[in-house]
Image (cartoon, rainbow, N blue to C red; front, side):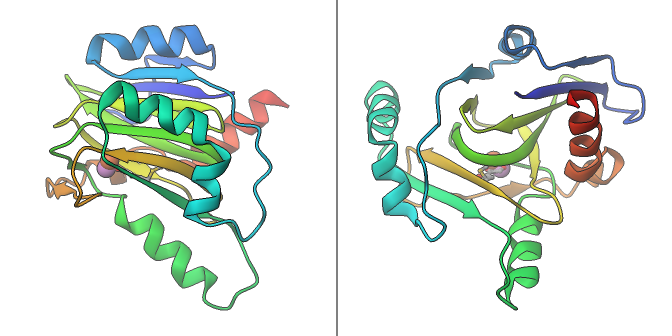
Length: 196
Ligand SMILES: CSCCC(=O)/C(O)=C/O
Ligand SMILES: [Fe+2]
Ligand code: NI
């Protein structure tokens, strides 16, 4: 399951669209150049599995995406709650990195293979919050203003594709818009309640 919520950029309290229907999500995102697809992500990942293991588990999907779109670098972001005393600081730093509005010079393709996270796309006077879960493939054109939230207790794994060997580079806009919209934890609470 996934969820799309759309608000006017001036008001993060009154959504103009809220849908968990995959075809409706894809249809709403297509006009802004965003590709949303549901693939299958059902590989069992060991708790300590790192980049190489995750990429190996999804080799077929990784090869399909890189071959179709010419990516030269693939990496994995994976966060899982743990008892490690360093976890709270690690989680907070990982969350903070993507929490303010930014753009990229490269398009952005993310294949979610575990957990959940929300991409907020700020386009044409609206904010589109795409809650992605395992199996979701999201492709965002270069230059789109956006931010990403994985919540206070991140649990997510996503495979990322880059055309540039520098990997993830964000250009921050300096806008405080991300603080005016419901964060991951607020949206996730409503989503799990409505799914129950
Ligand atoms: C789920 S991938 C981590 C976030 C990221 O790569 C990005 O570009 C956020 O804007
Ligand atoms: Fe991004
Ligand atoms: Ni980004």
